[in-house]
Image (cartoon, rainbow over all chains, first blue to last red):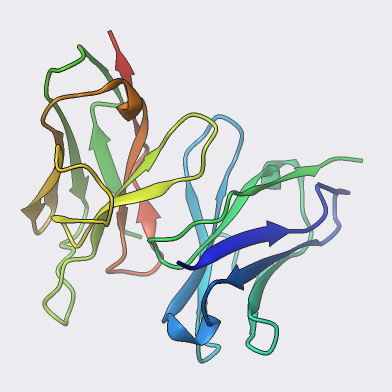
Length: 113
Length: 112
């Protein structure tokens, strides 16, 4: 069974860049069509950030499109999220998922100086 | 964007009794391939989401058969035939037909 593990800094300064990686284990990242990032602000619901196909084609939520990049690294069996110009509103638990039957445990990112 | 509207947002239920959650989409979720990409997710307190149902009515592996999904087009329902204590949490519908993918607001299920 595929497992996902998010990693990255838990604290990012305002106007900085949030960078997270999702490591895929128990299977090849190329075996699944799409990989997604989802976030959940404290006490709120789920928000789709974007997704990337195994061929490297990415789609993003328009509300974040100018700030977000999702990439895939097949050699390392992982995919990544970069979110630039962060603000307090980007504070959330960030999840990676394989659209949608396997989810990571989530990683909390706080934007604060 | 497709708006997913769930009701109710809070659902107090007696153990052993049935529960039903509605999810309505602002556009049809029937894809050009003929499939309807409507999922139901469960998020227990302190845990990551877990998919229960995909393509309207298909239960994921390991999901108890007391969970069932139904509906078509723009109107969908998740039913729990007999609520158990482990069912406490927030339930989300998620549409995967249109970009951006969108979630419902979530329905909090609690025991009376």
